[in-house]
Length: 395
Image 1: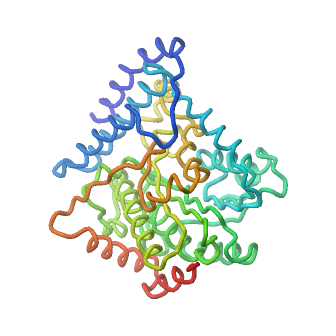
Image 2: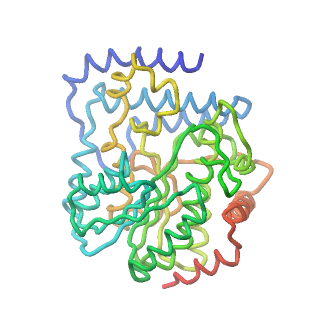
């Protein structure tokens, strides 16, 4: 029924978009500034987030409908095609920093591929973290960047592989040389799998392995200008609080609930990480972002997006991977003075968004401390070890 509702809403918007698209006039947009689309979507998401009695997967579908409709109306014609691509191109062209290094997980396809492409154009030397040698080689061939681009294999569904990956990075480059670390890789609504670390795969791949990888690489991140990015999702508004206990639970047909909780946990742990960096007076800034409703392989296991009759419509309405790379590229390349006050925040459409505190019986600091402790335990990392890794980044 929910899938049918999504289809009907998308179909209702689709013809209107097709009619108005060609006559739409481009509208200037300023990166980092709120607009009608972001304000409307944010208000609706906050309403959905407050519906604590509604099952998570229903709220996730509601957020998905909102993303689809706002994309259609504001990016595909009714208000004109916002010139995001031109804005990002200008950001890349005006970027005058050289000899900088970025590491991007999942940079061999989809949004990650477009992020890598943008960083290469900006003059970065990029290391792709890939699960597949074949995909990494294909991406390297397509990008044709020579020695400016390399890759290291890693399986984010295995902590042992993450440790091995970190060791290879540490052998490849000196301490303090990574300017940007982008935890882009992720999965959604995949068939349930408990990994060899006894963790549900969406939680491990989307959240816990990126946290472990980041903490272990902190001494290798530039402590004066480093930036850390985590891919989150607007589906976090489908949850009232991050239920970390789901990390060890199986599911049958509803993988979206685990996905939404993993993405909310990403956003909250980004805030926790920034708090710890600030505590030790480390200048590294952490951000998380929602790329938008982007047409990638991420939706391969969600039936409504795979029906052949509607594929063309979704291909048109949803964002392209290039459009989805806008917000992460903005967080990578924007002047630090534009971002310094927003460390630890969740961004969508290049604008910081509010994530409501939905546990009224507890103070936010208490909730964050509990989540941090629980997440580190799942990562098989002691709090003292995490503190040591963070403190070594002091300027």
